[in-house]
Image (cartoon, one colour):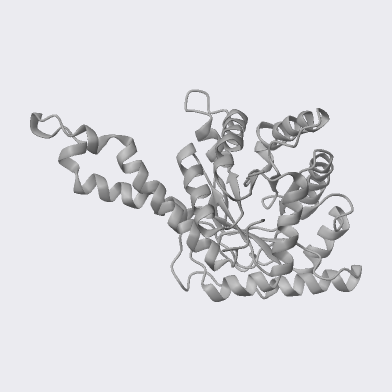
Length: 340
């Protein structure tokens, strides 16, 4: 059972919450980066989450028609086959989907899974993300209610981003400023609109200064202790201890202490994209620079086939990205926690 069933995915998240660890959620854009993520999880003996953004799905759909649903479905089906060779369990997730892409991405994918569940099968994806951070909170939560109902019916967990994360990812961007902090009032409005599990399980991407992409130390002020305030503020009203399952966005470049504080306060999933992209590309660039006269037909020569063969540099890229995934597992305390 390398791809989690709905029941197992819930168990994974419950175990992470109770054990104060989190799963790395690795963005993939190809079968090769998928294998790198799976390999990293397996080498760390950690379960994990594989995710596809709208841009990643468009790339996977091919540049001839750039169909996001085709790309996401194709890689998910591929994952269901190849993941069987890895001794860990993974969940499949779709990352950041803003309002203008819902009809071309998340809603059709929910229908795909609904049809599967109606036939007695498991959903194709285990969770989907609705990124309404560019909308007003009222509109964000109204759409969230609609999507949560559909997700719950298809045995899928919804992830919601209720307030902005700084930086840019797949066309959704926000300034880096003092607005990047979710308030207790925001959390209370979320609980009122989406419930605390009785309407369907959801993951909450709250903002505590997070920024997507690359940034130098000192440019971003993370306040993961804010998550404790959100948990306690909602718990005080609803009587449910630690009510939220938090997601850490913009995790690349975070310090070990910042990550540890986030884990103590209910983070069960942390997204990684920027760091794993670099880990994948770095050895490829090194190979090309070191072997320029082999990968190129310089001065009328013929080059060296074994040097420009994509398998040669592709293996280096996979190994490097897998190593970065194992490091993420260590930072998030998920190493050695795989389901037996």
